[in-house]
Length: 194
Image (cartoon, rainbow, N blue to C red; front, side, top):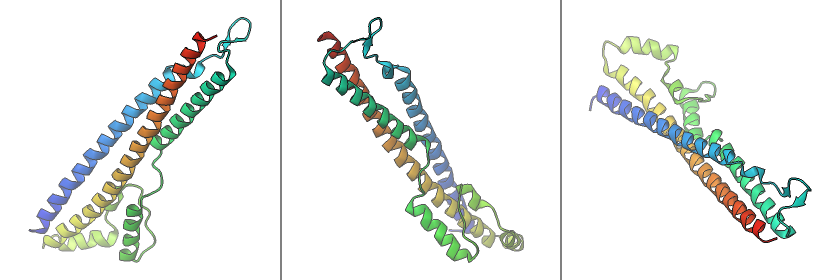
C-alpha cells in the first residue's frame, strides 16, 4: 500500500468522523427542541391557590408537598440535562493521551488541542520538509497521512465524549419529564379530592 493510499484511506475516516459529528449536532438539536417543549408546557406555573381568596386548590398539605418536590426534582433534572447537553465537559483520557504523545514526540512546548483540524496545520519545519520531499512524493504523502491520522484520532475521541454527554443529557431530561408528568398527575388527582 502506497503512502498516497494510506492518506486516501485516512481521509475517508476523517470524512466519516465529520459526518458523525454532524449527526451528533442533529441529536443535540432534537433534545433542544424537547427542552423547549418542556418549558413551553408551562407546567412550572401550576398554581397552588385559587385566584380570588388565596384558598389552596389542593387541601391536603402532604399532596402539596409531593407536587412541590416533584416539580423541583423535574426542574433540577432538566437543568442538569441541559447543562450536560450544552457543555463539552472535561477532555477524555484518550484525548489527554493524544496530547501527551504529541508533547513527547515533538519535544516542544505542550500542545492544547482545541479542534482536531488544528493538527492538520503544518509547522514551518514540516512545510520545509514537504517542499523538499514533494519531488519524491512518498514522504510528503506519509507526512500528510500521519497528521490526518492524529486529527482523526482526536475527532473520534471528541465525538465519543460528546455522544456520551448527549446520552446522559437525554437520560436526565427524560427523567425530568417523567417527574413533571407525575407532578401533573398528582395535581390533577389532588384537585378532585377536596
